[in-house]
Image (cartoon, rainbow, N blue to C red; front, top):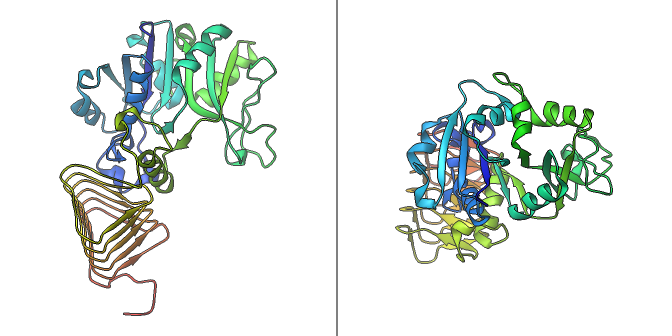
Amino acid sequence: MSDVQAVILVGGKGTRLRPLTLSAPKPMLPVAGLPFLTHMLSRIRAAGIRDVILGTSFKAETFSEYYGDGSKLDLQIRYVTEEEPLGTGGGIRNVLDELTASTIVVFNGDVLGGTDIRHVVATHREAQADVTLHLVRVSDPRAFGSVPTDDTGRVTAFLEKTQDPPTDQINAGTYVFSRSVIEEIPAGREVSVEREVFPSLLAEGRHIHAYVDNSYWRDMGTPEDFVRGSADLVRGIAPSPALGDRHGESLVHEGAGIAPGALLIGGSVVGRGAEIGPRARLDGAVIFDGAVIEAGAVVERSIVGFGARIGPRALVRDTVIGDGADVGARCELLRGARVWPGVQLPDGGVRFSTDV
């Protein structure tokens, strides 16, 4: 698709994933052992799109330092930085000078998806739409705004969250724009596509179309979703050409050491140079590069940051451990605990149970 360009919005601060995002933007955090953005870029390349513009803001230099011109991924990548937050619509308008194609596919940089990008673009062109939205059907749409459509696939409204949604279709964060529509977005100020651009287009009678499916979809903004998304990639539930056919109950990257008797299940991933001690148990764990999990420790549905250490027989469940933190032996960290980078917890220093 040489006449199609991709725009990925990666400017967010990722506050819900702190402390991990204190050192790296959310799209650069390792998911299934690779930067999250790499999975998205691999899907874009598999769809035949080669020209990608990243709309950056927070820690913008991190992206260009890692991906360069994109040639290692067989892509052409360019970067446009927001000097101040511009919202989704403003972020799209901010890259206009780099857009030369007539069809622009815009991706939200923190959504893990599995839809066929080619089909979304084809639907947009067949419908001769101004904008086409990818919508996914979810079992419980009450947590999201819903997007109803008519019998022809045209979007009829953008509705806020409600306890009684009229449809199970929600905005999946992938849009196909005709370039001329992006030209109409106000420049130089914060603009939301969901609250301003799309409703105003509807009010003008413009054609907003929908591509609706039941494909894999997950917003990776919270630790719970981050852990589940990583595990789904490891297990092959979520698709990523970047992983090839490496699927199973765990994924161990090169240079990691796994001691005898260690158990890795639930889509756990062990990063490069990490060490997993004897009888340690990882279940749905995301272990970043260089981390150490000592003998008998249990890590469940948790993220352990770069170079962090979990001491012998510690229990870490539904928790985020910051880079370089040291969790002492027999500590118990549960239910949404977050340990900031470099913090040291002494042996037995944090407990939920009464035994010592």
